[in-house]
Length: 500
Ligand code: NAP
Image (tube, rainbow, N blue to C red):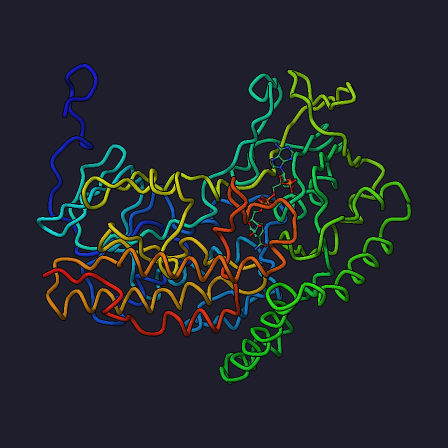
């Protein structure tokens, strides 16, 4: 293949032998996979990362106030407890440090291939290998390809007229411009999701004025955050079992939140009352209270935790605008009532391209099947969130329908990594060319999944990123996380075409 001007580039070269296993992404999922492969004695793998550093979502989402909304003692690897978490809910920098510490502790540096953005991968049936192509890097062949690049990695830029015409500074929350001093500035923020509720209180402290454009108010509950006490850290160091106990307690506490989501949405009445009291406690203006009170069943969209969001909205320099946005102008944001809200800086807290039909990169499987085409017609789907029929030896970590609205994603990642490891071991032990999940198995699994999802809180009528453009929930696991772990505990060879 020739690049423009007859100059061939590294990316055009024929694929050379790469590692046996290519892992795409270095967030929690990719690193967990790598650590578990090493622990199983498998060394022939590489981690391909498009950025210049590891960390995934915890590298990219460096906006002020970024922190986890699941307690760090349970939002961390079970095999790598950190007794030194400074707070119940670790901040972004601390979580990134934790991941960097894991890279060092498990000797992953030699396996890292930074600045390797995968653009496409094609399965070669004869050799049973994936040909993996990168932007500006020579392609490689790998027997196994693991997509661990996460569902929340591609920022979503809203389709609002005039967005490009804005003459001030504009950026997305996942691409924060730390060089942009907000002190005294007029800042417009679009979006009131999990990211915005964390950065708006920080921005409001220094900005001259904040105009927050809210399309749908989120349900926000108190965040039971606190500093970890020095004696607790000492205890966890000398008695790791004590930290394990805390982790177990937190796991079950969060697991119980699923009851109202998957068993009976009526169980959301108590947390709804708490949410309303939380609004009343911090916001005295009845008009503002009315604006920020959601009208949908709690849990239908992600439940957010914050102690400073409502107090920030009540500040005199913050205005919540609920009139729909008509367009972005060179000087600010014009709402449908014709008012132009002037701004120096425009921050997009508009989330990620989760249910975009496109696959994470251009993936071509058996017989030229393109994942993007399959997903465009039927929506994203996989078997156990891991395999897709006709894409052999390809495994997702956090693939379709493995997301959660109630507990730690690290639990899901560890469960799925165990499953993928078993698959890799089976490929090796049985000397298989490839394993390809049976289409009927995948289809039955997805029928079951959608049947379950229809009875959950996520199907009570709100609009959320959990649903694709056809209203199908292709993001979330419809049950308890321990049920997922049970489902993926053992690879069933009969679920696959095993080809020697
Ligand atoms: P998000 O939850 O998808 O929120 C996006 C916000 O932008 C919503 O308020 C949405 O309004 C609004 N929006 C999108 N397009 C718009 C448009 N054209 N006009 C007006 N408003 C628009 O995104 P996020 O806040 O970045 O969070 C995404 C996910 O990341 C979370 O659900 C969570 O899973 C994860 N996250 C986790 C943490 C953590 O602490 N662990 C922190 C941040 C994010 P609508 O609601 O009306 O669609």
